Image (cartoon, rainbow, N blue to C red; front, top):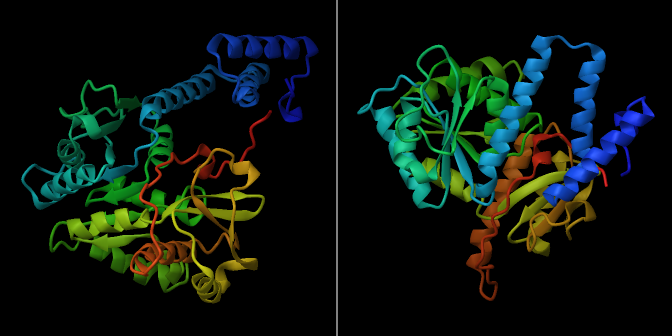
Length: 380
């Protein structure tokens, strides 16, 4: 098996034994894909032994890897179903407008074919879990010394995952969710909202819809939005384009529309050899492409936006989808979101144009792990 030089042990005998172990395991499990990456995991473990890592460090690394492996296994059967992560206060009482809003949103989004992920606790999380129903729910629980027992809807379900570490739990949320909806909450809710926006703004996660959903007539997120405008944008710590990365609303239907419209044409994207590949149901025609190049020239580092074909590096990802290729200024993610919104508008434009039919099938495809920003290539 070819070896990555950076993950070759100094002892030749250990290298041979490691290769033999991985080859044997691949035959036993009937899976040869990703052997190079598995080898890197094992080499990293052996190097911890070589480094004389403390028992505390070994426990942390071991527990984190086990938690991630378990979460991958739980979510894998549902990879082709889009999921929305719902956040909000664990202390929200049943019968309050926020509780009812979370319940109603989850019920509606599941009726549209989505599944719901929550932190599995009470309050807003329990409301969303009940609205979604057990069969369409995932619980991503964090073990705390207080207030975070799994709610009745998800307790005991195979789709409930209990995490010890916040960071592995956050990785799971970001990796598995195709949209984020945040209702009013405390430090944890604000942390999740800022974390999602930071990862999207910096290109460390797939761009996706983020909705701050208030109670009807509520001012919680409008007040937050005013703070962002006055304290972050005015000193130019964020740009005006960054406000395209999220939506603030108190209307349940508007929140649902924001999420569903985002995927009406846009499917997913990934960076390949310095270029961004955007996957679409419907590609722009020549006139529309020319307009996009004129209107979004400021976000390009070189060359125009082009309609292309699937690249070799994308083999098997998003079959049947159209491609746009562009060289994106990675600091202009807000502008990228605006481009995606324009591309989604093409569905409406094309469907209303005589003689131009849209494909009937909406392809759902799991977001690959490299959309988290770890662009490491798998060994042969």
